[in-house]
Picture (spheres, rainbow, N blue to C red):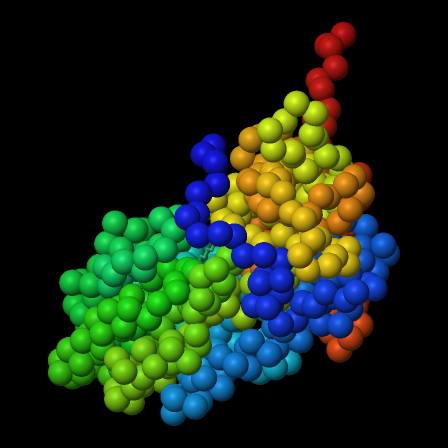
Length: 447
Ligand code: LLP
């Protein structure tokens, strides 16, 4: 496991991080607050590690996306990417606020139904949907299936025909565009497994338009995640627009373009992606086609809304050049740093004066892998045993990617809404770790 990347510019200070996270505030008495609620009060009651999600922040960010599209004069359906955070409380909020959902599995589909999101507002993406998942989706009459290959199109046609139904589909096009993001989360290059090769898309669309059991709506694309500039979007949408025009010229109906997700947030010092700029890119490339548009954002609306609270188990200093602060959260809780070398802000919960002395610190979890590292050489105030920290921007791809590796129970989850908070998932009990495990009955010796 490589060390975390070395940045050439200085890390943001705690105060700078709070300035880019308006829902967080340092109170001189209570310490770090999220949407007006003291995080220490939550940690006192629930313990750590604990995920805390700001529902108001999620709503505000979704509303900003909606307004950005509307202000650009675009009719864009917002389908929240469930994979970013699939908690029922989140999906319930998404449904109540009138958004749709982008799903990638039968499990996610079932969650959206449990949260009463109308099937017509569901889009099904993913490179390998099983027959059972397709039957579930087609049976429910979901709004749209984004088809990822010629092979999958044939399977969908066969299943829908057998069921006596019509599946509404778009073809997900791989535009072969570099999203300029981490290699593990880029999806729009020809070498990636995603989407239909651009050169095959028109021919396949013609086929889709005449297949039984299928209604061809148009095209979709998704080029990757944590995208911070509009250049890659413009390039991808220009290619999709080319396809729409070519399809229409060939006499085919095109009513829909799904522009995918991917807008990035500010984890460190990078300026976050702007929904208004995304709206501008969509308008510039697709605005005059007269199609119904959609986006599938996950990280942007919910990433900054969440923090992971953790306590210092101990401080390992003796004989160390740089002290290790060992926290009760680990890579099994938040996988992003170990998986993508991701940088997450770390802010102590205790009230601390601006200008307090800081020193380089390694922040690590207790799991038996060197990759279980949240931060190296991070400038932090001295964090003693028992002190608490908030790891920022963990609302997306945080709790959803947790595991129980090292037999560590899943952390508690809390939702803050309207100035109050509620546990939305209690901490997993240790005995729940093995509740579904079966010790085989061993054949007794034959007498
Ligand atoms: N639509 C499709 C088809 C996707 O594959 C994804 C994300 C999204 C929408 C939402 O993308 P977003 O707006 O969240 O960037 N675990 C990784 C991110 C994986 C993203 C996978 N696909 C991480 O923690 O960075």
